[in-house]
Length: 254
Image (cartoon, rainbow, N blue to C red; front, side, top):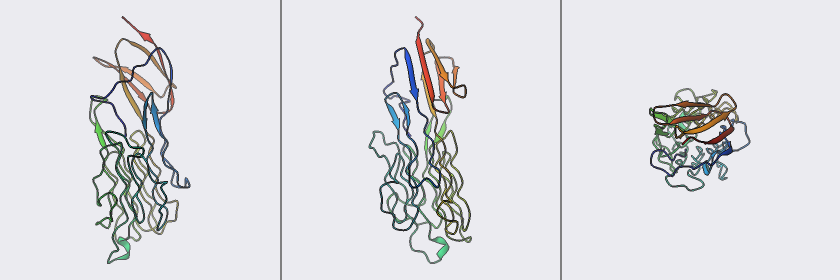
């Protein structure tokens, strides 16, 4: 997750049309691809990394804005590097357990400040059910909303439940032959890991992202297509892009 609110550098938009990209989450059978980046002007929020699909997965295709959960090692977060960080690393699989059901896959890292959960980022988890990393809260809409929670890790058998999704729309991990929960659309939550007996494509879908911006009340602006909205607040206009589209700036009233 990337934000310039509050206190960050503002985008200055001259009259014209601006292409806005709202990132989509990666589906579980995507062949090892991360989520799609979201782009507004010069601000790019990198898509989250994919989750590991097998034992000893040492590729770097799980790196991303927030790292995907790895088996045996969690993938890197905040790739490319930004300040403040846009995401945390994914968690590693569980420690070799006394019970085979505890042999979990890793959970996804949270967006933004992210990084709470059942394991230390980049290290073996200590819990049989690893919770996804927490996302980041932001109040640009006028109330606090948490975005970009990591997906929970899945477990091998039915005696241990999958890990819960991280706050901010992360999907829950599954147990046994279960399908991981989907991440929440509009929050950019990570998909939960599938159960160990459910096959390679049993993870949940990553949630689609969202782009929220503020403009002066004096701005003459429109957003397309119609599922994207502009609303007038007491001291600003609130722009919400739920899908990719175009922001048109016609100018500013004196």
